Image (cartoon, rainbow, N blue to C red; front, top):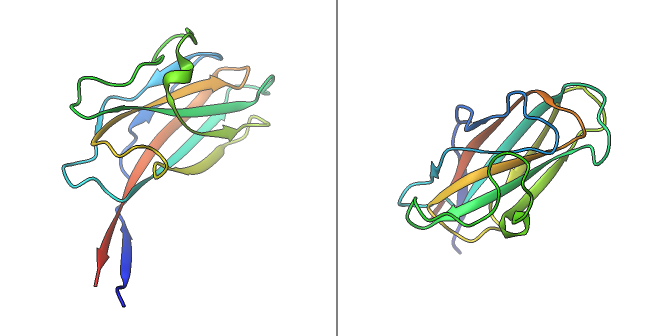
Length: 145
């Protein structure tokens, strides 16, 4: 019988600082290189503090843009508020923000197509600006014995 053991790397430095992202706006990370030996999965830690009481959809939405060569990324918005091609982005998940306290949630990239390079894209759909926020990563690798 084969035993597979997973290992999680340490949490990275912030790969995307959300700063004071305005309501309805998008922000993208710089390209993230997962390495030639793409990990089995990547855990994302998303944290944010709304700048005031939230309204509307009360959520931070997380997407990905993928690339095989680090220059031709999938289409979809990265900055500002143009939602024209939002459906082209790969949906990762949403962080509900029902009040203006600190919110933190973990996500997985496992359901996405396997690519070496990606950009994380966040849409502030909370109805208010973000006061503070970051996204961190930790690669999941495996060994079979």
